[in-house]
Image (cartoon, rainbow, N blue to C red):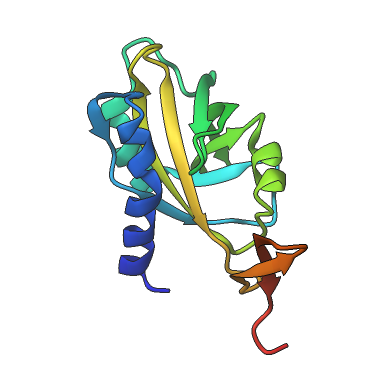
Length: 166
């Protein structure tokens, strides 16, 4: 899946968050894409690039070096409490989402090399810095298939995962 496909997929997945009315003044950043490292405790966001995405959403007095509590939403609208911090490691600077990132990864079965797209916004009611996170799994390609099953005269819809090539 190329970059344009990821953006289109992201657009379709974040439509709900705008429709739900939780995005302040309908201001939602463009997606910022990053590939997951093997550290499931922290989502590392390189300073160059992400700074441009974030800067317009920070309020005076918010010190990312000290850490800011943020809300993170998945494509289903589920809310996760996390911390956004700015880290300096050797001569590299990063923004890091943590204190909840591990739970997010586990709940969504995310693994190293999966693609993450973040969009920044302010919550319409609480004014808290927030993110909506969409993703594309790259580690294993699964397809979701659904079929209708007739059992005892009742038709039910059943889904299952299929690994290509099996």
